[in-house]
Each structure stands twice: as C-alpha cells, then as structure tokens.
Amino acid sequence: MLKLLIPLLIFFASVCSAEAIYQFDNEVDEARFKAFINEMRCPTCQSQNIAGSDSMSAQDLRRDIYEQIQDGRSDKEITDSMVARYGDYILYRPPLTPATLALWLMPAVLLVIAVIVMILMIRRRRAEQLEQPLDSGEQAELSRLLNTPSSAPERQEKPDE
Image 1 (cartoon, rainbow, N blue to C red):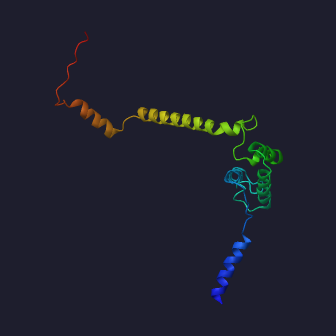
Image 2 (cartoon, rainbow, N blue to C red):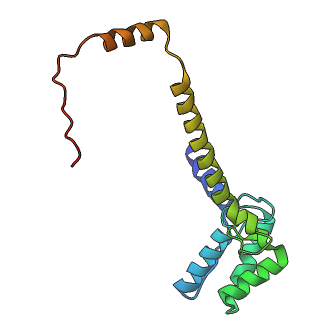
Image 3 (cartoon, one colour):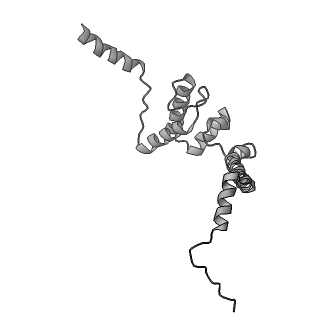
C-alpha cells in the first residue's frame, strides 16, 4: 500500500503545482516571453518577477504577455501596454525620467559621499596620531637614541653646482 501511495502523492503534487505551459511557434517568441516574465515585477508580490510568482495577477500577466506575443506585437508595444496599465513600477529597470532621476543617481552620489567621508576620517586619524605627545618611555628611548653616536659613516652631501 505504501509503495502505491508515494507515487500517487508525487503525481498529485506535480499536477497541483503545474503551471500553464505556453506553446510557441518558434524559439524567438519563447525567448521574448521568458525575457518579459523575468524583467517584469509582480504587482502583488512586489519583490518577485512574474516568472517566479504564483499569484493570480502574475498568472494573468504571463497569459497577457503570451497573447500579445501571439498577436505579433513588438517588444515596445508589449512594454508600453504593461507600463500604461501598471506604471513604471512593473519594470525592474525603469526608464530615466525626471521622476526616476534620483533613483538612478542615488547610488553614485552615496558612493562619492562615502569615499569623501572615508578620506576625511583617515586624514583626521593621521593628524591626531601626529599630534599626540610621547609618553615617558617613548621620550626616554628618543633621548637615548639622539644622545648615542651612530656607528654608521655619515654621508657627505655634494654641493650644488
């Protein structure tokens, strides 16, 4: 009985989780479909593309994209129809417009600010290290080194000609 139950469970699990399989006439249309469903964000899930979402809205979007591809629409027409319906939010890479300018420029601005802050912190730390007075042990060692004659021959400087 157990030997029969396991294959039945596997069969029913695969049937229940099966997604609609879309048939394409050529590989180009199939590649376009996959590109669209990977590049568009699910309006319900918000952090997933419509390829990886199981929500009803993602299923509707996949079906809508499939039908538009079958109708012979261009990539721009499909994208424009989705943006008209859901806004720029549906695109993982929204276009550069005045409304999205901050979104595109913010990473570069934050990087420049971080580099400037790091440079200022390093300079301040070096300045603090140079300004610290020597403690008594370091002062004694310095005095000892300055008062002992060195055994190395002194260099003679050449006069400027």
